[in-house]
Amino acid sequence: MPTQPVIEISARTREIFRLVVEGYLANGQPVGSKTLAGAGQVNLSPASIRSVLSDLESLGLLAAPHTSAGRMPTESGLRLFIDGMMQVAEPTAEERAAIERRLGEPGPIEQALEATSAVLSDLSAAAGVVMVPRREPRLRQFSMISLSPGEALAVLVGEDGQVENRLLKLPAEIPPSAIEEASNYISAHLAGRTLGEAAQAMRAQIASGQSALDEASRDLVERGLAVWSEDAARRPVLIVRGQANLLDESAIGDLERVRSLLDDLESKQSVVELLDSAREADATRIFIGSENRLFALSGSAVIASPYRDRGGKVVGVVGVIGPTRLNYARVVPMVDFTAQSLGKLIG
Image 1 (cartoon, rainbow, N blue to C red):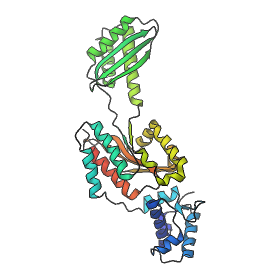
Image 2 (tube, helix red, strand yellow):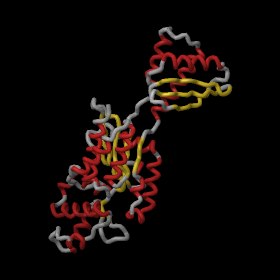
Image 3 (cartoon, rainbow, N blue to C red):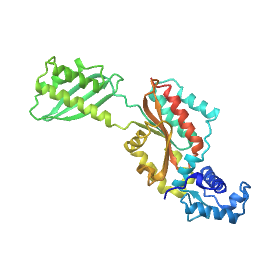
Image 4 (cartoon, rainbow, N blue to C red):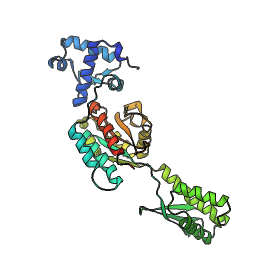
């Protein structure tokens, strides 16, 4: 059901709606008319407040759970509140100091990325996520070892010391000498380049006639580089910390939703695809429940912000994943500040 714009809701109705949403986000519990009247923030009787709550429910902005007489915002109501009514608060001095302290600890950039997801989790009491920059390894050594007719093992050693293996399916008639020649060619001529750079240089050499490789060896070189390039492009690079925060006391009555959310987080490729959609955003993006198919069943929320290197290029995304009752006014600027702080560390 489409939501009614804020400007078409009376000031009294808008104020009651705001109080219900803020009350729900503060404690995760539905807010009733007696609570609103007793707080002294609304100069109306409980009966009059109930009438307004009923109107807001008919607009699809509030819902009444079966177990409570109070109301809680729907996903449409949350979207309306976030886009048109929420007053964003700047991170406190303590929060800024905690973020900068964790990110400023000495160590490689990978350690800073781990710290980013952890500090977001700690401060938001949800799960912190960081999508790592997709940086292809530069080759130090690339070798292929014949295992059996039709099979070879490709071994890549990056300049960072990481070693990875991939199994190659080859035509059965490929001789071991061609495998050895291809392996030596890559190590001797293409070391120090990324996979994409290596493939481009190799094709240029072959096209210009500078390569002494025979046809079989050229095919092996192409196969080997293609396997690595494809794997690097598809690999989901995601750091998630703080899943345990999702299992707080308020989750006891909602275990199915939490279990579904934890399953979603295990599917890192899907989470990466969701975060990737925030890469080109000008500001922090907020996904609520069924607005994204990944979290439609768990009814969860995602707050994500891109972070840039010193040249202004977007290289990744940081964010928070948790229940829809996140404290958006506090967490949104926190995620934004973290993205800015992380960007200062990225070369």
